[in-house]
Length: 102
Image 1 (tube, rainbow, N blue to C red):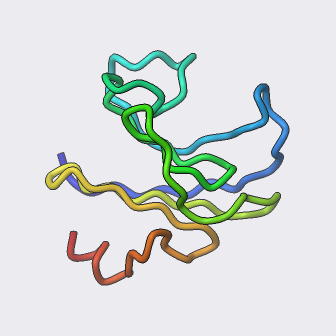
Image 2 (cartoon, rainbow, N blue to C red; image 1 turned 90 degrees about the vertical axis):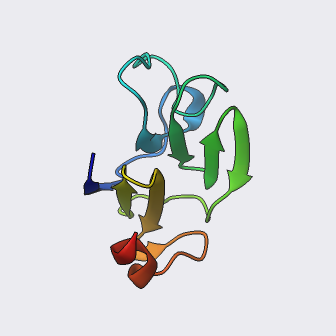
């Protein structure tokens, strides 16, 4: 339990299937599957096409990533919350204060 944060830099946008993801999954999730692509996979993923995928349902969260974008993920497992940022801008209307308090 606790709070976690990491960043990664998007280098290229041409993987198999044409989409990259950042996110989290539980320990039983297959590394060969996309986070959030199944209602029972207990994962959530944010795609390079700006879609948030959770429980096999997608919703818009920002715009397409481009090479050089810095992607940030903040998680608070105590309250089961996750936030995503692109180049320092939190997506979905989240604020730095909200994330620090969460």
